Length: 308
Image 1 (cartoon, rainbow, N blue to C red):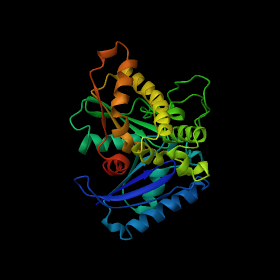
Image 2: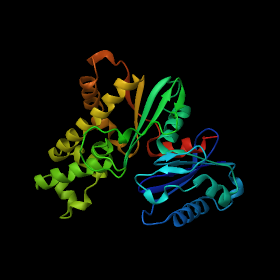
Image 3: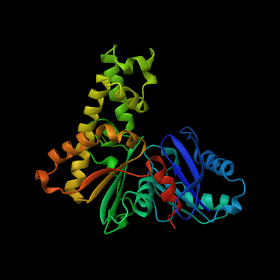
Image 4: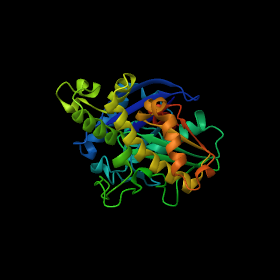
């Protein structure tokens, strides 16, 4: 049995996965941004131990991490979990679990899952976008995962699309994920709710604007709430700008939308396709397509388990 671990900016997930890519059992829990590296490793170990007390069942462990990873499995950069920079994650987990461990960027893992079992099967040139706490990207080139010279290719969330824009946790300003992640959508929803006290969004808030998150979008859109519609339209302008840039750079056959926000894909698919076509250089020159990824939030888990 393979063990996949997906570390996110706000959660840790682990799953036992069979050779067909099917999840047999999984567990999710909040991550602790206040933890130091030693405490974080302990939290990972406790999560695995809860999932699988008999670790002799595990033949391999793969980890998807939201940042840049060295070839030796050390964390190089980590905008959402900066306290873990420099952590030799591969070595630490191998000591605790007594199995071979591989570590890669979480979006690379998700792309690998979609390439091997999901929406990107048989795709020669493709990109998977993971829309969640931040924005991750996995690039498929000639049917294989492209990592670049230093292994950090695909950090698309940190493309600067608004020079001198909003400060990002990476240290730069104007990064794409500050405008097109789930956090960015949440900010837009809250802004529109406060502007319209008669909206469904405001009712969801129940007097506390912090009750509104990206997870509220679908419920509001189902009732044709105009506050949610306006927020989503603003969000799609930013999302489409980044995607059109990627189309100009890579000319992919497919761009698959994954991550937590992919649950909203049916509500924005047509509008997003139209906006991207409008913004791509030479208009109809890009003949690729936008699709929803198959595995959603589980892609990172599945792909991690198949890093070896």
